[in-house]
Image (cartoon, rainbow, N blue to C red; front, top):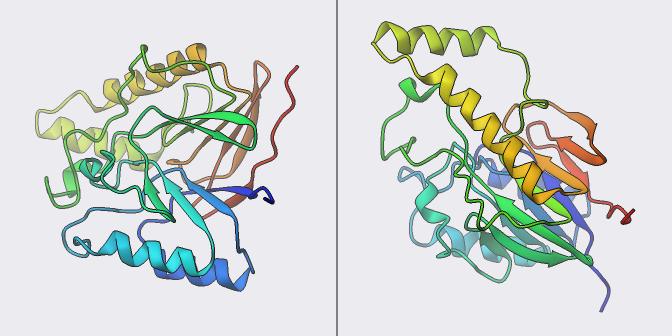
Length: 233
């Protein structure tokens, strides 16, 4: 059987129809696509019991296996293993897969800086953050997360400062520390997993880093990048 090529996909924020059309126009068939999170899955306004099956059928028409982890703009409760269909899969945190002869580890979740603008249980969930489980964070060749480490995050932006100040005005003063702690959890995850490649999104920009022998690819919105397995040293 011919091996599938694997592509990594950045945040697309629920543009599934546009995504499927774009994949068809590019002639991508018979491939595997791994989404690094933020597809607004599970939002009750437009996600119902049949949505996953409809998307499974759409990807099946292109012979595409679509795999996603949770971002911060999704309902984390639908990433509990209930959506594992032939061509459409939501992976629970710390899922391990063998792909192209490599071991992949998947860990989703992140903190929304704009949570003040969102409605709990409708487009924001309190259990959105990345959870570090050192017992499950075993070594792997490739790591896929939604957010990133302290050395890959962008500098503080005007938007971030706006929300920090907005929360502080309401007596909520923890956002900056929460974001700091989240990057440190990703730092620790890297120390345990020691991947040769690491893919993530969240920050809406395209950057490639080399850190301690690991190629780190940060994906922009809807960016599609082909995975090239890195040989072992």
